[in-house]
Structure formats: C-alpha cells, structure tokens
Image 1 (cartoon, rainbow, N blue to C red):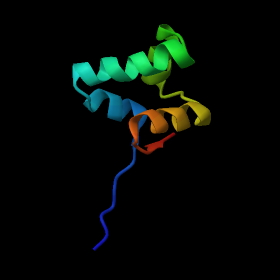
Image 2 (cartoon, helix red, strand yellow):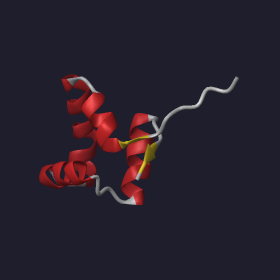
Image 3 (spheres, rainbow, N blue to C red):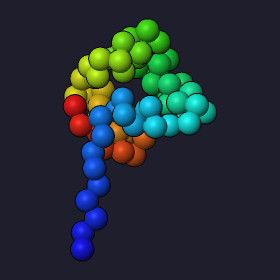
Image 4 (tube, rainbow, N blue to C red):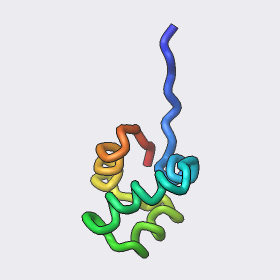
Length: 66
C-alpha cells in the first residue's frame, strides 16, 4: 500500500512548527529573499509566488500547494 502524503500550504506548515523552528525558517527566508513585513504579509494571505514556494520547499524539504 502506498503512503499518500497530504500536501499543505506553507502557512499551515509554518503554523504547525514549534516557536524555535519558526525562528529558524524565518531567519533563512527573511534576510536573503524578502523583508520581515513582506514575509508575514505573504504568510497571512498565502501569497507566495511559485518561485518563492520552490525556495521554501528547498529550505524545508517539504512539498507545498499554492
């Protein structure tokens, strides 16, 4: 039997993380790819671009839906 892995959007994934893991992800994304306020805006509205989703997948090792 194949295991089916449910794909989450990044917001759901981020909300499921511990506070320490959230800080780690944020520190990887914010200085290199976007400003702090932009990160939280996109997180709140789930407005990451396809390229940003690809980068988040690369950083986390997870697959996300748009």
